[in-house]
Amino acid sequence: SARQVGGDLYDLFALPGNRVAFALGDTCGKGMGAALLMVQTVTALRSLAALYESPSQCIAHLNHLATTVAYDVPLTTLFYGIVHLDDGRLVYCNAGHPAPIIDGEIVRTPAQPSLGAVDDAQYRDDEITLRPGSTVVLVSDGVTEAPGQESRFVGLDGVLREVRDAGAGISARDLVERLLALSQTGDADFEEDDATVAMVRYRGPSTDRKST
Image 1 (spheres, rainbow, N blue to C red):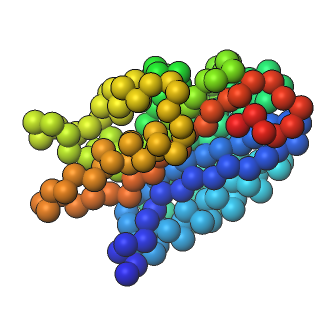
Image 2: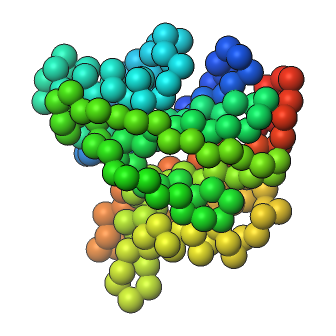
Image 3: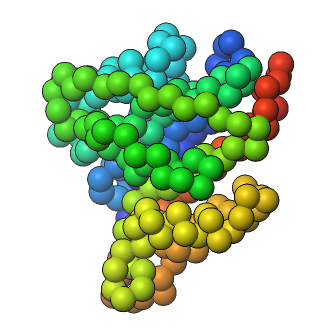
């Protein structure tokens, strides 16, 4: 049914200059409308990524589309990052999405508005250098807002505990499945949200695109 169609997005694609881009986002609402918005967002992001090197520029243009071109668009959170494979630099822009967990630590930066929230919002890039073996974990709020113990949300701290308990040697597939399990409460009174987990592991400097 349309209600079962999700509004989360994730994408991974290569860019010129030995770079790899990845994104994870979440739109308010569910159903076919939310899913179509996510498709449009991914398509627009890929087009903008071919024009602008800066993630914040791409995010700003997406926000412009959401606030001035589209009509009555629900708010969308989006994390968009670019890994420079030659030196491990991760340049990213976070528009209202849960903070990334990088090498077992939550990397919080000053908040920036979700897409569609503020006309002409100004966005900035943040940067961190990944080491060989570094991992970046992203989740949607379907994970962080799932019920945890004592009727509390799992929260980003709960995700962090799970990442740390899993250990650095866990495979990407196993970690993703472990984190997705946090959203599967089995509580009949809880309406589960879309849940998405993405993990990027940097293998070190490389002259090809096999480093992530």
